[in-house]
Length: 254
Image (cartoon, rainbow, N blue to C red; front, side, top):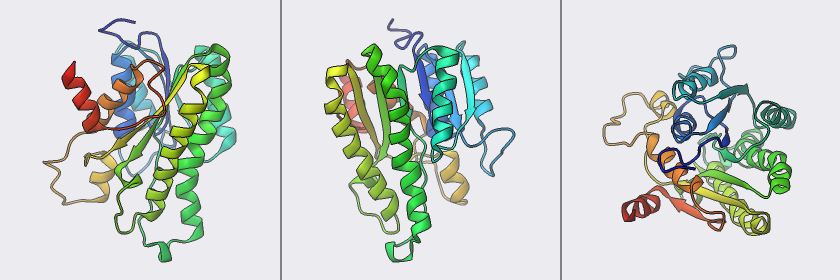
């Protein structure tokens, strides 16, 4: 590991990496020297209305001089997550860092939220990370080395009308982070969460909110910079939920 390439030759799996925060994380981690497994549902064979595909992100990773593996993965499907784990091991031999970034929101008041929509939010935002962690943890535990970073939101704490299912999922994700971080200490595996408290102008937000003035919003790179800082910490830094502002305070201290 070097100061210029602090993640040199690390193998990193990033979910939800076809655009936005996940794409920024994949590229920033590649610049830091990592090889990236780029996963999301959106691929060139299965495009979305939103810009970005796993192949585009993979090409951006390769442009940084690192290896990339683009895998189409729906994190609600256990068999696809298990396949992602197998392909990662086949291609790279291990996973050093898992970033659970894939997420979804379906805004509505609780009394207007169907059980089907509630379950979808929970399956993507909570069950997905659980399945990803359980797939990669056996290898991490065998090597006694690994990092897991869960991407959370200020809505884990703040009440915002219409965001109840998303808020509940992120609150649970943070509690999962704290428990697993404590339980995995003896295995030299750190589990932490980034709670994004800033308004970030991602492709998704801009697509769904046309006409909004995003000039004062920050870019997804604000989140990727903070995620990279978490990834560089010692294994003893675990079970933490940290905001972008808190990370910036640490970076300012040098």
